[in-house]
Length: 351
Image (cartoon, rainbow, N blue to C red):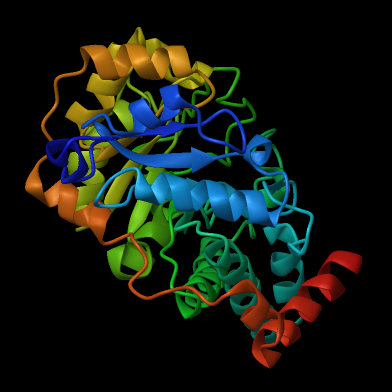
C-alpha cells in the first residue's frame, strides 16, 4: 500500500504509459512516484470495454488525487479504441470537405463527433483526449495528412471550436496540437527531425492563428511540435522558451497546460538523453512531459529528474480533470442524443 505521503501528492510533471490491459506491480510503483502526474493509454491497453474500465479505475485509485488519464483518440487512423461498442469516427479532413459544401452542417457534425468521442471515452474512465489537431492541411505532411481539418486557418478554428464544444458537452477538456504548426513540413517527427524554414510572421499569420483565436478558454491545453523553425529558434518548439514563453504565453496570452510531445520521438533527440530532453521541455515552459513506449527511459527519468512543479502548473493540470461524473455506458446507449450523434458518424465514415 502506498504511504499517505505518496497518496496525497499533487500531480507531477511526467506522463507515462503502461504495457497492457492490467497494471503490474512495477507499474503501480511507477505511478506512485511523486513526479508522475498522468498516464497515456494506447491500443495495446484495450482488450474490451470491461478491461479498459477496470484498468482506468485501478489507475485512478493508485493515488489519493487521481492521475490524469489521456489518450490519442482523434478519429480516422488515430483512434486507439475501435471495437466492443466504440464508434468509428471520421478523419477530421472529412469535416473540412463537408465545410466546403455546407459550413453549418460541418460545424454541427464536428460538435457531434466531439460529443461521441468524449462521451465514450469518459464512460470508460478516460479523462482527456489529445485532440483537436490544429495543423493546416498543406497536403505534404506524412504524419498529419487527413488528421487536419483544412488548409484555411479560419476553417480550422471554426471546426475545432465546434468539436471542442462537443467534448465539453460530455465533460472533457481539449488539447490543441501541434503548436505552432506541423502541417508545412513533410518529415515525420516520430522518425525524423523536421525543419520548417518559414519566418515568424508567416507562421503566426497562418499556422498558429487558430491558437490565438481560440485561446485557453476553448483550448485548456496545447502540445508543441517537435519541429525546428530556424528563423525563430534553433530548438524544436517544445524545447524553446522563445516559442512557449515569449510567443505562446506572453504574446498570445495563453495560460493553459503545455504538454511536451513524446520525448522518445526522433524529433526530440536533438536535446540529448531522456533527462536532457525533459529538462529542456520543462525549462522552456512545458507543464508536463510525455515518455511513451519506453518504461526503461521513464524509470531513468524518474530516478534522475529533480524538478518541482510551480503551483501554476499544478493548478493548470488539475483544471483538465473532468468536473462531473461520466454517464454510464448503458445509460449512454439509451440516450437519444448520443444515438443520433453516433448515427451521424457512421454516415460520414461510410461517405
